[in-house]
Length: 263
Length: 264
Image (cartoon, each protein chain N blue to C red):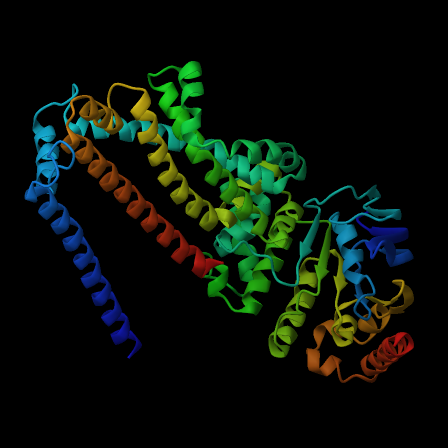
């Protein structure tokens, strides 16, 4: 089992002498090979949730387990794609993508094979020797995604990976991620503030509420996606389907309620 | 327009520098030649140059001036190299691990204010007046900037990059070598330049007290021979070599900054 299980997780941060609950009693499971998107207003703790799965933060109460094992720190079986790419600026595209494999002690040939494979999948052949600053934002994020896939992780944790991209690039990347996750299905936890993105990409969309951060609702998209064969259609076509717009509107209402409710 | 005024400025600078030098050396030559001050007190600049030139083909204090300079440079390289080799990794480790930082910083902060020259008696006792003593004095001078700049540089490396490396399975040594070191490199190189300057200054100081070859030794011997020309020729050599080291490291620093500036 390569699932992610948040079991009654509470995360408190110190604030102004007291504590502030970023998340309270969150129980949530991402099944093996399932793609779960998390949406919610800012300050609802969605990034904190991801960081706990990554082992970069730890719950105050409750447990976070991946593949049945409690998370005690970061590790390559849980790859992270950061919003600001977090590529090593002094390493070439090749060395960035191969970094995780090098850490594992993979041979130079295996590293090169993986680099070639993912650059090809991303349509980025010939950029091996470029440095990140020579690439556009979209290209940089492709490299970051390739870097995460290359270590063959059990789960992928994505923290608003397309948040820093312009709208057009973002759409292209969303389509590519769908394609990639079909060729190479993984357990994915995907943080976003874009409702469209969440519905388009995910099997399930989890809506978080804030103050304190908790699960508000979970929306199942997988059945509709399968029945209407979304993956085979263009993104703009999918986003025009009544089923899609219905879910989107529903999620928007939920989010708006919360924003109105707390202000 | 900007380029023109820039060029105008640098020409002006050159002119003023030349003017300053001419006034300084000219004034010095005039005062010395006037006979108002004894030659035993103030030799003329030409006499100083002459003393230096003579030492370059007639051994003084056992060696040619070149050999003395070489001896000094060797000590410099050892002390400075050792300081960089220990100081930079230590600074990076302190920047990475709070525990090490907390343990080392107070001691380091205290010792930092012991001037390199104040280490001379201690260094002589522990390591003798051969190679060990002077090297330790240079080390004492060169070490702090290596540590401090590596430490600050490591702290300025984006936390996100360290986290990315961790999630890709990198362990501590690799994080230090492949993330903190390159990330902190501009700061480290700037520190090395400061460090080299202090090392060179400390070295000459150490040589005044210990050792039997080196520029500092030449100056001490010149003093015993009551030859201010030789002492001043030694000072001139110290200045020229020190300047050369600084210019070289400035070049390295600029290269790193240019390359890294583009990258980061």
